[in-house]
Length: 293
Image (cartoon, rainbow, N blue to C red; front, side, top):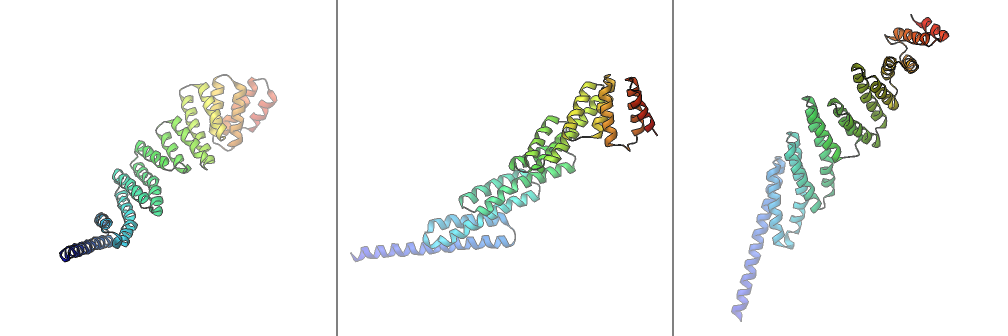
């Protein structure tokens, strides 16, 4: 019986010694991680914290504090690795690391890191887009800003940026769709201005290609968003070509109202007078002829 007690005591002592040894090793790993943090060696810090955590889980209650400290440190370190990759413009790798950080932060219930990681995604893609813009890679910039908007669909300014880039690429339908998103997210005035400009460019292109009916439609559409002097000028010129002189007069008059000091104001004023004369409205014709300087 004494021999049995002796065996049990020996096993207990061995277990205690083993547990103490494991605790010492886990603590060393944790301290190595903390040291790596001071030198900004985040990869080593993460590796050591994760090893310390796994070892701590096997030790039991004695390692509860160590386990808690590891869980507190790991999400932030994982996110910092992603930040460094973004700084180095390694966006695909960074996205993978952000996803890892989100998973870890969720598992360890670190809401601060979770929120920061989620907010980092649209910022990362915006940075990627800005870099592409500097290289005049409009397609690449558009793709990056689209990803940024997908990550934060409440950012109306990003939607405006995407729309402008689509405009540069000649993708008017896509641009107009993004402008609708921008308007939904607090950028209605800017969205209307941009939409007006898109239709104005179309109207100008139609006028040059002598598609006068299309030019009028596009100009009218531009003015439906924001009244634009040049849209009225194009509509007036196209209407005149179509023989719709009353429409031409109306559009030219609005152009003059908006740009009375334009360099072509006298020529347009004379044209309005001539159109009135052609319509046998001598009084109006004389009124406009008198305005010509």
